[in-house]
Image 1 (cartoon, rainbow, N blue to C red):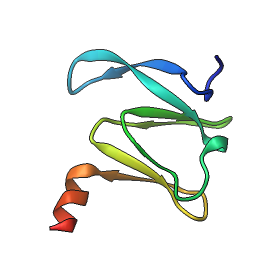
Image 2 (tube, rainbow, N blue to C red):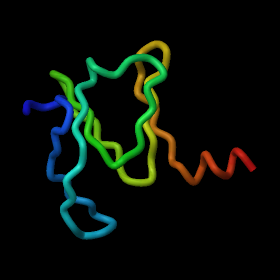
Image 3 (spheres, rainbow, N blue to C red):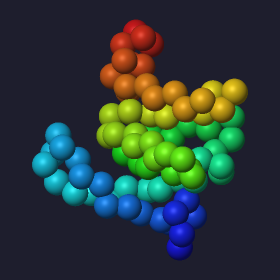
Length: 79
């Protein structure tokens, strides 16, 4: 499977854990507005790659921007 296809994994070094994990890869073009995914994961596109670390979520803004939010911050804001 190529990058961004369902089931694609990529090896990613996780410095906080000092190990390499296999994480899902998503094609940016396949993510529509309001898409929300939990890290760790990788988002690929022609000009760049975005790494979403463990503990973060990524949401696609209505204008197409990727917005990363730390999960702890989201829980604190909800309280």
